[in-house]
Image (cartoon, rainbow, N blue to C red):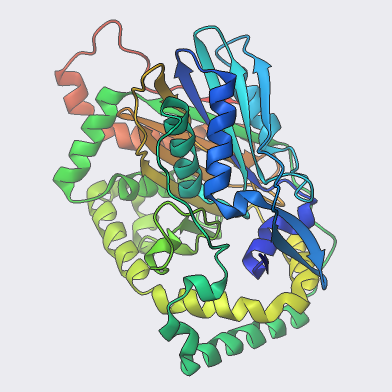
Length: 446
């Protein structure tokens, strides 16, 4: 079995020459056996066909080729020396290329300690989005705990015919609009002057945590105000970027949307890479007078606008997917045009939500799930990832020094969090924190 990469996947794979990967680090307390980890990796590889594929070049395009005897998922074992090792190795892992012609595009690094360990799950973005990585991590942990647990199997490599509704594939109007979009995009590429590839600065990452007590107050306040946490956090970061960089400092804010909303044939536990994005916006007048605008009013308006945009995405997603498949012959021109443009002027806000991972297992505990880190080409600027585990909120902020100096990123982070904490300031003052309570936020660059 084999299939060619879609244009979206090719745009993430980039001939395997640039790192386009994500890593999720987790902290484990308790013993883990090497044999159990290798068994778990073997089981998830047996379940998901894409993990048994190597990449081969055919007819000028990369293909996923299923292997009858696939090489195992690599497990790298490193002796743990300190609580901060995961930060150093996360940065190294996300920048390390996959040799997709010889190994699966997933690997696991185990920072092994006597009682405390970290597992770093690393996936190439052309086979896994953030939700897929959480699914894979959940399966690995369950199989470490219960080696004989039934996980089911998948048979599909997720070609278009396997995923898209038959009515969308047969819809002549939709297919015509897809071809029209492709033709217009070709015209855009022809008329756009491409210069040399733009150079970016050193990539840095900020990680911080909002503790459980404060996170719970934030969630409760969001519910009271009729908004999601993502809406409140997005408004806070958008206003913070505006305050620090000015009204022209960011071209657009976007958020990935789970493609499973539009692909009903895709199973909830399937591994899938492509996440269409939606543009986020606030009323321009709100930006001009943001200091005097009611925060929760902005958050409610943002939530309504986002819901309307996502609800109207279905047809556009199909048209874009189908249309891009008419552009494979233009792939090199598209990449050259993209690399000569300024890739560090958009902000990507990604929220994985509450991670559905168990905390307690028979022989170990999942103590912490650090926020996802990613390396995108040619620059990850600017990515803000958010997730929740064990009632704590985890954040990461990834950019590069030329697109956004580290000092400005720190100011944006502090302004955004100050806005969120100001919403519950009276509650915090009314209930003094116990002496043993950890600091609610700590930013660390790696």
